[in-house]
Image 1 (cartoon, rainbow, N blue to C red):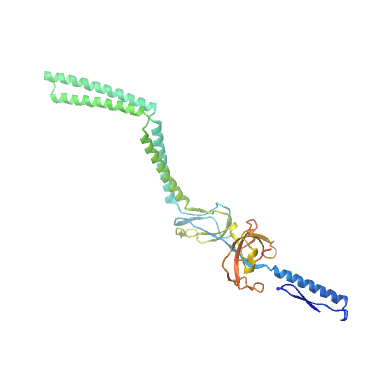
Image 2: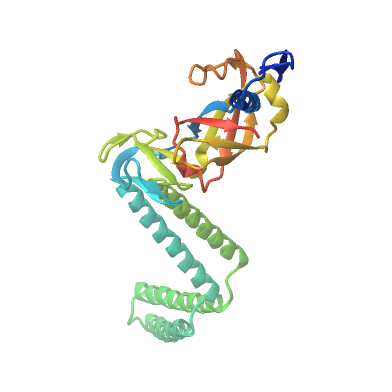
Length: 341
């Protein structure tokens, strides 16, 4: 008598011996039981066959926003770098000079603003008062000389031209006194609002020029935004690099992902955020990864994952990212097996 056990994926055929047939010995009965068990185990494994895939990486290509000659190259291929590590820098002599000049202009504008706010110091006002006193004495002496010359003209002792010159000198001396007195009044007053606003605008403009020059200088040095591994250096020390041309190829720690392919019937058990199990090989513990992307377009099975256990012609690509702590056990291009259970 024959029985068939199993699903559509696996059929185990069992031959039962009736009582009318000769009895089998104990060894034969034991062998039949073992074969039955092995068949059932094979059926269960076939339903949990892992999917084939490989490790992929999301590289970052780092470049400078300006062109220039590489002056320093601090890293090499294969080095592990932490976040905010300087990778390379371009020659920046001109940019440094621009920063220094812009800083001096900013400091000068700030000093001028401080001088306007504070006004004249008391010592400067005292000096101006002394100049006014001297100007008054000179004006008094010039006025007296003018009066004498006028009297001498009437007596015929002095020419009219000399008297006119004395008059002009007296008027100039008096005007100079008035000028100094008004200057004293102005220096004693607080600066006018529009002059302060004008100088404050000059300070802001000078600071903006300094920030711009400093930014141009900072762009000559490139730092890594995240931790990772230097996969390649595309230029050497001393070479000229055009603006925007990548110099460093970096693989971030979080840039490792697993890409595998599943048939249509397996999509029902996969959702973004689901946890899958990744087996790399002997000596490497199984890793857990979270599904981050499921392709909506079917494609032919890539040759890299096509084998006897994966004979579906059309599959869907799925991407999953392992935890960053365990991602260092994976290398791009390494084949893996992924189990969704």
